[in-house]
Image (cartoon, rainbow, N blue to C red; front, side, top):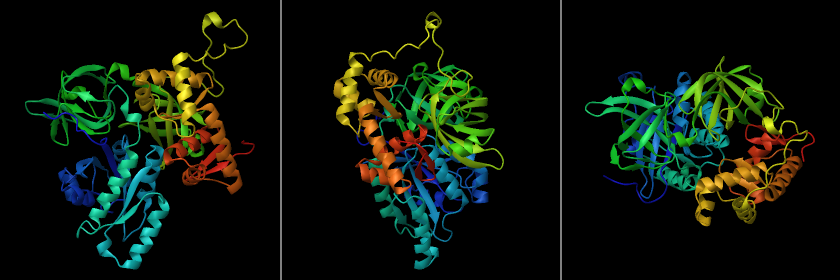
Length: 500
């Protein structure tokens, strides 16, 4: 049975776009696979559930998740987009961008999916001028993504599209946050196979899964054993992070697992929670204006009350439990009329109930002291990690790379990051972007000054002016948004009054 393939990191790609713009037809043309499995989908000529296919680009294989385009199935679209690395945005040349094009883009931004390709489909149905107008409108939505004109019917542009996806995958594959030690898979399908028992599928968000491994299914905490693994119908001994995976589980019945559950281990830190402290990275003002919203995380969603914490974040008080850990991305939608408002990242997956200005309580034995205790001095290894971050300056390595360079365990580096952040020596802008405070202060002054000088700024402008990659520019701007030194509106970030 095959072991993990040697080569570039596997990645998962999610389609996005309005209904009837040709997402499923394009996936079929690229892969030869029909992703509309249900008879109802074929009868109605529209996707209802998620579909999956494998795209072989030579050096790299991509898992394609084909999502429904109708507004009634945005919930399924978000479940499919959770855990993807890049997008394939489909815009029909005879229509141009439409309402679900915009909402799907809002979902992608909320989930932090920055890399992708735009496919202008149905080019065989319109003349050159109509193509040009549609291409201009699509390019304005995501100006940094390559745009390729294609026809699923004639095959025109398919090779160019494959090449663009391969180039984009090479950039998206640089992300390091999938290398966590413990596996996390949010279940999107559950079924039984005669003679084999319960099978679950999903995108492996992080970690590796091995045949024979013991796993835990949340929220019910059922214990199970991985009897076998398939990746796009190919049996494997090991599944790598970011792959689409099917797990045949021993020890659990079909009725003990459902869509929205998580396959993981107890060490992974995933919690069933009714409260989340979060940083709002997009749509903060719209989210805070709603007393009650729908929160989508992984393949689950729940209604929640929103409490403004006054620091760029909120406490989401959930009516049904979600399965989360710190660093997870989520999407927030308005309940009525339904619309995607924005999203962000989980700050704390199990906070107490609190409002703005709350600080963690001082332990009882220390509560008699008037001032709170000073942050602990980072230990020797944390100081060593700090020296590495200071050496990296504006482009810090992630935990996995620093651990490899220092011949240490990743969890040791993650612990050191926490010590440094608590002591004020480092700033964790994103899960995989931790700046030394000296470097962050310099970058933040430059970014805020740029926004003030120009009236506003974008990820692309910060990237180009400060000589950063998109990854670091985005992390910097999101951190400044959360600190309320900048304010995001769409793709632009505006200076706030008195920000410096």
